[in-house]
Image (tube, rainbow, N blue to C red; front, top):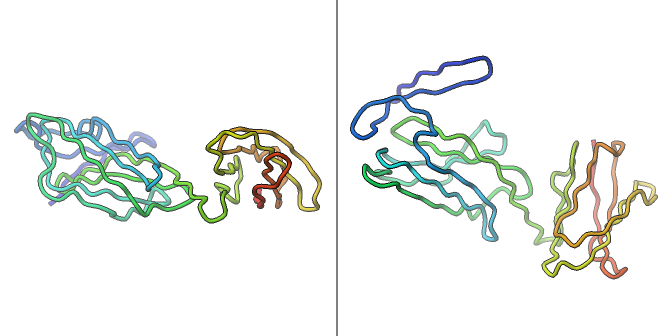
Length: 208
């Protein structure tokens, strides 16, 4: 049975739960369990790494994922005993089927301890279909266009309103271009990405 106590200080919520630490029952927060917990996009998916402090012992760790940081679904479980008395223990998992082109949240559930880590957010960008993607789209603050440019070629970015009027022109050698959308009126915009005056990509984005 999981038994926990929650104490609220305004908007701050702290969860205390008994765990076995070096053979003693104590109350701990998740930052006393994990030395590190990271998520990062890689070419094959999203890589999750975490390290458990020495002296921590639990039964099973579940990795959970969410698109709203509220409703989480388990995507992997490290079954059996986790952690060790005398050494730190590190774990890795590759999420090969991440949610594409939107923000996702990952957290750890320590199974028998009834304790959750803080969530970590990450965006996995996939432009394999069209050669580019706009994330987020629609957007209310910043729109980012991601595209392949491994050789850091000089690219021209052109932005047009819905009637075809050129409203912005910039150059970049990066693999993304960020638009500060609050400077624009709400509506549909079209863009072109040119290399040496030849169109490489074109698409649209929505500002609201």
